[in-house]
Amino acid sequence: MRTLLIDNHDSFTFNLFQLMARTYGVAPVVVPNDHLELTPALADGFDAVVISPGPGRPEVARDIGRCLETVRASRVPVLGVCLGHQALGHLVGAEVTAAPTPQHGHLTTVRHHGTGLFADLPAGFTAVRYHSLCLSEPLPEALTADAWSEDGVVMGIRHRSRPWWGVQFHPESIASEYGEQLLSTFRDLVVGRTPRRAATPAAPPTAPPAPVSAAPPGLVDAARSWMLLSRRLPYAVDPETVFDQLCSGRPYAFWLDGCHPSGELSRFSLLGHPGGPGGEVLSYDTSDGFVVVRDADGRGVDRLPGTITDVLSARLIERRVRPAPELPFGLKGGYVGYFGYELKADVGAAGNRRAATADAVWTFASRYVAIDHEQRSTWVVSVCRDTPTDIAAAQGWLDRTAAELGPAADRAGPPPGPASPAAEPLPVCPPRRYLDSVVEAQEELRAGQSYEVCLTTEVTAPFRGDAHHAYLRQRRLNPAPYSAFLQLGPTQVLCSSPERFLRIDEDGAVESRP
Image 1 (cartoon, rainbow, N blue to C red):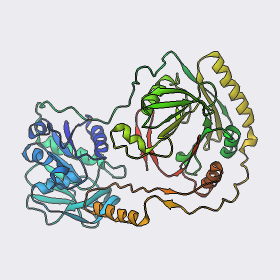
Image 2 (tube, rainbow, N blue to C red):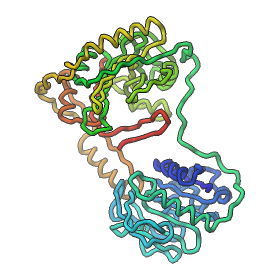
Image 3 (cartoon, one colour):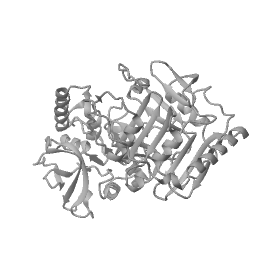
Image 4 (spheres, helix red, strand yellow):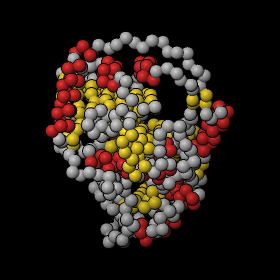
């Protein structure tokens, strides 16, 4: 079934795209709601139209774009999801009102009569809601409600004479049950009433951005070949001891710390530095227009034109390990570091804020240790150029490190002593202003203008202690799946997070947790 997916500029659109492609065997064509090509003629070239979720209100032209006029005048079956569901109701005069309470990421039990989209679905299945607005009952004569939540909000509608269906919940959400079956039922309803037609030429499909595979000219030395050498030790070692042995006193080092006893999320700890031939550190400020290359000791050795993403793209191509090694963890060479918020200036945002630290720092992971907490084993890894001299240096480092990391290294050192008296933290945003922002965010949520709010604030405090010592205390007091300590010259990063912002695996699958 060929479907047109109207994108209301929503972060869930491509989750819905993925579910539709899997269910229908053909990827939908995605057109933004304000695209000039979005017309009834375009819609009529498809077997069906799906209207995505989105922020805002269906009555507001800025929020809904050309969606209403396209659907009103087209002849094809339509499924509306969340904002799309409200848009179909609004088209026939239903009142869009505030829900009893905003529901964002909430699980709900869907009650239904087993008709329309809900045929053959269990009574009382679970779905995820992301909405502050809803369709108010009684509905116009043209609509009938097919499903409700436990708090009485309409969760599903169908038009009495036109092939329109809507759901207020998100069938594409990972925690929603029977999303694929619901879309399959929509397909069956479409096929049962729509003759096949020749497709009208459609607007080019919009898909998630493809990974960057090319690098700026002159930044890649294709003549070099890189390889990864590794050695597995049949025992696990204590990460605190390893960091002291491997990285103590080095100006640049990293510790990606699986210190939380949560199985898969904390299986590995990775500790290392950019030492050895080919080791380097890349640092960048958006105002400079070039990337500074330093050696493992922090001495500047080169300047490369372009942004940090230009240079990293080139370096990752140049230093790609071939053949790809079979290792149980994801880090197989590459860089460890951070991107600062100020990098948004490189992609067109206003760059009116300067940070006291570099906007990006990345260390080449040329020598590191991976501890497998699940299998109770340790990997010693070195990445080097495929030359006799560099291979000999890497092999020598593997031998020395493996000998140092004997079974005795599994003994944890003494716990860190008491912390120095903490200075009073100084919030950058005054507390009253921050609380006012919380109230404003809640008002926007209730109004349906937002459903994902990250109201981050910054707190500063003088610190005169040892950053590594402070991290040892932090990891014991607050172990988290995504913890880290980064020693990046004059800057140290102490991280304790339950969240994975983004992971892209070797097959191109993208994951964010939770």
